[in-house]
Length: 333
Ligand code: SAM
Ligand code: DTB
Ligand code: SF4
Picture (cartoon, rainbow, N blue to C red):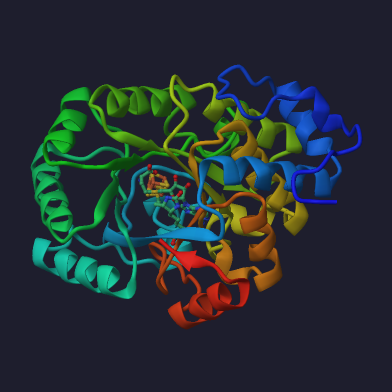
């Protein structure tokens, strides 16, 4: 039997995967979750190869340009001021432009093609936004794609970032609309959608995804994917994070472990419902085996965060990723 052969009447016949759909229902997504694992992976890889280069994974590098001291109370996040006494994380000021450009140059020289700058703000002050706009211009001039994540944005602030040439804005919905209030009380799900609207209106590509492993149900995971796929345009990038348990954050003790295979299913379903989007296997790789990551690539993950640090927590060392890519025959892009 050759590649792409008949699939013998499994449940997936009911779905058309090759069209861009914005009307995925939660029930349909739950039905994808119920598919035999190998059928799901096979379909996800087939769709992946239709829209993306086979055996190729894009590398993004993160830098925390302003760490900690955040007034929000996201239950997973080490950067919230509310948990600072328990996490021991020290807040720091916005970095200098030159230091950011030095880090960006090193990222580019190590092979990253996108540089993502994160700030622990509820929303940026206009003065700080000007500094970030200059960082974006400088990073672009190095030949890197740019992404920033600064919290909520007004429409005019999004336009200012667009003028600076920003390629992507990261703003995650993080979980289902229902579970959101159990994770964060200082802002609403709808406020997240408003910022995404401002980013889209400014013509900036949207990077939007979420976290799994926060004690949500499978229905919540389906609700999160349905909400992402229902956006007016599928986000150009969809980061799927597995909760990084940071001591002192509320979720680090309370969230039950999510099974590896369930995580892989979430990646596959993101791939199937948003076929053209870049699906990023994001936070959480540090504690994943090579085999689990390989399954995520099979499920359609097309990007990773590269470099030994995410924002505040560790990521696999570069040499481990180089060895992983070699053993899987993957090319970095
Ligand atoms: N403050 C901005 C915001 O919340 O939009 C930007 C920075 S925030 C740290 C960016 C994203 O990092 C969050 O939306 C969340 O998805 C992810 N994140 C934060 N802590 C995490 C953790 N412990 N595990 C996995 N992902 C995490
Ligand atoms: C995203 O979805 N994941 C990245 C990026 N967007 C900004 C952040 C992960 C942070 C993990 C916890 C930390 O290192 O602080
Ligand atoms: Fe602040 Fe963002 Fe962390 Fe929430 S996720 S506490 S908004 S830095």
